[in-house]
Image: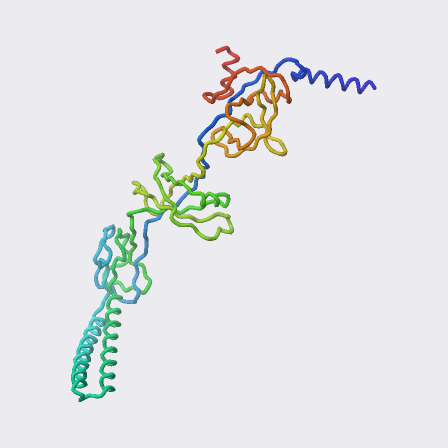
Length: 352
């Protein structure tokens, strides 16, 4: 019996101390629920790629006869860069041309005789077949000759030269590299949680790690399959303009922005985590009212409120640990974000 009375007295004392039942009001700091422009952001590290980039090599084994470029040259599409030894192939091509001319003349004679009914249809067919065979031989010899002339497949800038005149190269040996630097691509990965944002449309900006200057980019391509080890998706974006100080193989930071919207936000200090979600204390008619909320994104000390509050309502951002639902409160200050809450408390305490 005595234990029950003691417990009741202790509970009554705690209740009164906490400000319930019309007791002393707790001092709190409040902040207004605000409407803000908010956008989802994700930052990724990207590798810079040239618009086009290849390693030039030979398709045949032979000796380098001549080199027609210098390292770092800007070249046009189709420009001759390297010639391999081609004397034998050139002689074979010229012989094929002579044979084709001979067979073409023979075909014309047979066609004239056939028109006078002095040659059979079989003779005409044979002459045509021989001429076609000679023409095919010319094309084959020309292709073999062209294999020994290495041209730039597109306009760009040449890299380091890997061969010298007189060197013997095998098929596939690197000769130099060619890079189209008119535009830059960015390759990066996006976590699986952001895949839905790809369909909603993304705004992309990129910057060099040591710079705050942002450059617009547009998503160019995406992989079909996630990387099973990282659960991320490989993406490529195209920079909309040239960027000084950027080279293929370098790094840039890509910022992805999605779902721009007008939304409600509160200071993160107002949140009271619970097992089943988040709550805040609202200030209503001088009392603290516990309100469940559903939150979204967090940005620089503020939290998006998806459900549970209205613009202009006041929530308690300091002193909530002393409250229970229905506690009377005294507003010590209104927090507007212009200074830290600790500084606001210091000024209130010093009477500034």
